[in-house]
Amino acid sequence: MRKILVLGSINIDHSYELERIVRPGETVASRAYRTAWGGKGLNQAIALAKAGARTALAAQLSKADMPGLETLCAPFGLDISGVRGLDCPSGHAIIQVESSGQNSIIIAAGANGLMEDATISAIDQYGPGDMLLLQNEVNRMPEIIRRGKERGMTVILNPSPCTEDMLDWPLELVDIFILNETEGEYISGSSQVEEMLDILSTKFPAAGIVLTLGAQGSVYRRGEEEHRAAALKVEAVDTTAAGDTYTGYFLAGLSQGKAVKESMELATRAAAVTVSRPGAAESIPLAEEILQAAGIE
Ligand code: RIB
Image 1 (spheres, rainbow, N blue to C red):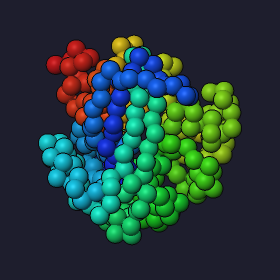
Image 2: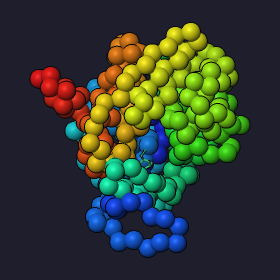
Image 3: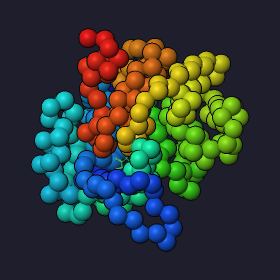
Image 4: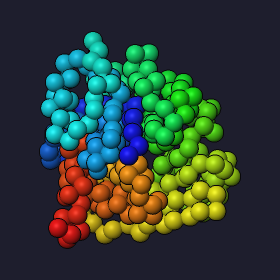
């Protein structure tokens, strides 16, 4: 089984349940409030580990939050020896979740925005055949992409959230992009799905492009190869971490030698379970729970 290193963010999520997402100038009372573990790096690492992939996380957070992270990750074997506690606040997110399950998120970088050499150097323990999974919630991203490639790793980028500087990154070094329609539009300049796929695969001819399209399912394109997975009909409670679950389960499938289409279908089922529960990291299902949800014991 291939080893996967996730180098990314850890956030403390502050989630507010509302009838609908707040409009400019409005003050709204929330129906419920909770704090929970999140951050795209942590969520995706947890999804990989819960799916049974050999996963390690390299990240930064406040020293004070380290014991809580250890308790969270211990049960499913996520290697957090590359997570470093710093004397600064952890990153956090303010999340509004409306009754349709849709969300709106603000992030504040905290320790995620202060990436140190000692954290990034976790990459040097990996080599050809290993995977490096990245998002866009930590700083020094161009350097991190180059370092992974220099080690001969397969570099996977979930370009979320999109930022202006991203178009100047060495994106030609990325082996697999996993992105949603908004991110696809940002990088391709087109809002039409088929055109978006054409532009992305022309721009990055050697890369695999996985485009997640919500109710329209997901599409994989690499050169002439194309696969599509249909979405599942689910009653969404909270869509937070749905994309992270898809990303983690898709890559876990590939790392375990599953075919692309099978990995996409597994990822779709896992994300459907995540949206049926509140929260981020903790709402991600274990592989057994996905089989149970599909009625397979
Ligand atoms: O993708 C969901 C995540 O985005 C949340 O957990 C939040 O922390 C932000 O990083």
